[in-house]
Image 1 (cartoon, rainbow, N blue to C red):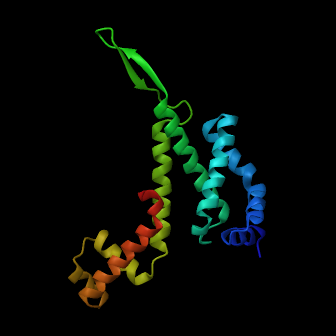
Image 2: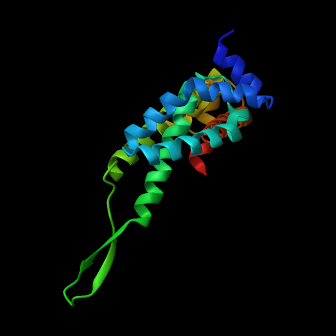
Length: 188
C-alpha cells in the first residue's frame, strides 16, 4: 500500500502522528506552491500553516478519488487565493478628486492580478465539474446531458431513453444532486 494512502487513512482515524508524517512528506511542496503565488517567505509560511490546519479539519472528506497530493495542493491554492484577496481588500491607496478630496481606492495585487485569480478559479471549477459529471452512472449522465445540452423535455428524454418520465426526472434530480455534492466547496 502506498505510504501516503496509509498515512491519510490513519489521519482520518485521528492519528496525529500519521498526520505529522504527511506534513513532513508534503510541506516542502505546499510551501513552494504557496510561495510561487504570494512571493513572500513569511506570508508563505503562514499560509502553509493555515493550509495544514484546513487539511487536518477536512481530511475526513478526502475520498481517495484523486491523488492526495492533488487534493492537498488544491486546498493550498485556495487558501493562498483567500489570503491574497483578504490582504488586497485591506490594502488601500488614495487618489485626489477634482475638489481636492482624498478618495480611498483598493490597490490591485502586486502578486496575482484579479483576472489570474478568476481564471484559476474558473479552471478549477470546470475541472471539478467535469470530474463530477464523469463519475455519474451512465443513465444519469445521459439524461442530464439530453436535458441540459440538447434542451429536450422530460417526455422527449423518456422516449429516447425508453423509460418513464418520472424515471427521467429522478435521474436528472439525482445527477444534479451528485454534482452539487461534488461542487459544495465552490458553493459556500
